[in-house]
Image 1 (cartoon, helix red, strand yellow):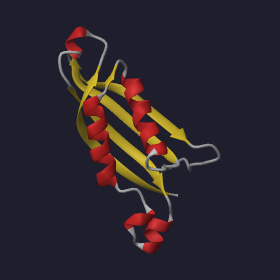
Image 2 (cartoon, helix red, strand yellow; image 1 turned 30 degrees about the vertical axis):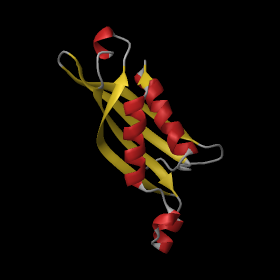
Image 3 (cartoon, helix red, strand yellow; image 1 turned 45 degrees about the horizontal axis):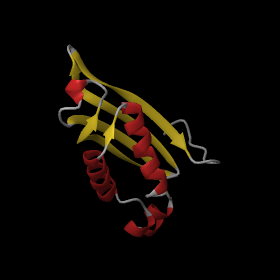
Image 4 (cartoon, helix red, strand yellow; image 1 turned 90 degrees about the horizontal axis):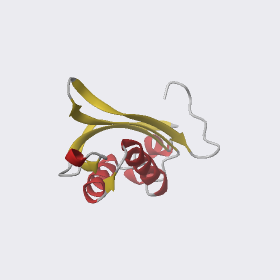
Length: 124
């Protein structure tokens, strides 16, 4: 299995349980790695892979329109989107809220999921 990664994708999102977090969107940073078919490299054809430009635009659009209480829920939503809409067999995601606490750069969550039967090597 080959992998695509997207690092430091900054997106405006509605996320949080505190009143100060509900007054407007805040910046979240996503780092994604997801599996793609080996056929993409073999055939040199975008139709055989997952288009990362389409993924980033879809994430931006969805996160701008929804509210999540928890960063964990936001992350699970992104993972589910990659599974269901883009057909990724495996996803690793790190998502963090930037500058929401004094003296803390970011807070967030790591999520790693695979579809049933998909085994991913440890190096992924």
